[in-house]
Image (tube, rainbow, N blue to C red):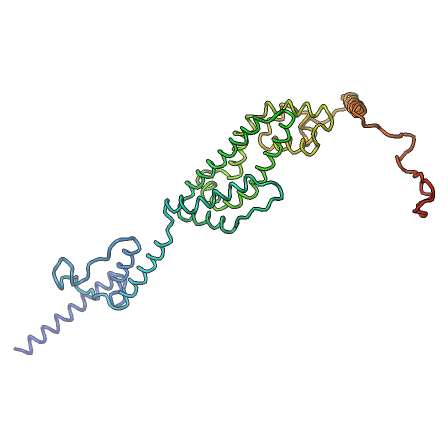
Length: 337
């Protein structure tokens, strides 16, 4: 009788083993030593959920775990510790919105200030690597929208101050100061846009379908150029009619800059823009050659009236013959005509 009971217990054990094998098969052949539980534990830790109750604690009854599931072994515990350590390390590097406002944006704000107010050739004591790193970290921590908003607000405030300073300028300094403001701003963009390249690539281009440089140029157009174009253009036309009232380089910089900001401003003074921007006017036609010649003669008369003589026209090349007083120090140059 005892032998029969032992035989039945062995058969029962065999049945349990088969049931455990089915559990393993249903769980995609997880390895022994609590492999499935280790997977569940790691998954819940990554999701931020607390680990499931162990087999001995299920339903509050010791030993009430499902059949065939082994208790987590040393490997499962080690995996859980590694996952928990990795999660803690990640959480320690999180940049909160408070961190952004108190630490990261002040660094960017100071650097932008220096870039916007620098003069050509000035040395700026900022670390481009540090600013680039700040932008990169803020983008990775999902602060792109706030950073873009802060950047636009910062530059807008600066341009409004520039506009007020131009409004207070006297007419004789107005053109030159506008040229300085335009050149200074465009020069600053050459540094600001590359520093914010990650924000431009992963936020402005992706979500806003725009470009940072275009947005910043538009700011200058709206807050400075549009407010001053109707005061600036008459002064430019007057300066054009008076040769060398302003330097040719200043005139060229302003005209090209205005064309970059808004090409349709060409219609306000086509003749002026055509002197610096190619293909502005329609092609020349033979029937207007006399008019072109008359314009050239008028320009020559204006130059002569302002003290620019044409020089001696009796020789083919002015200054070709040299007159020496006394003995020449360059004997080898005699006889050259």
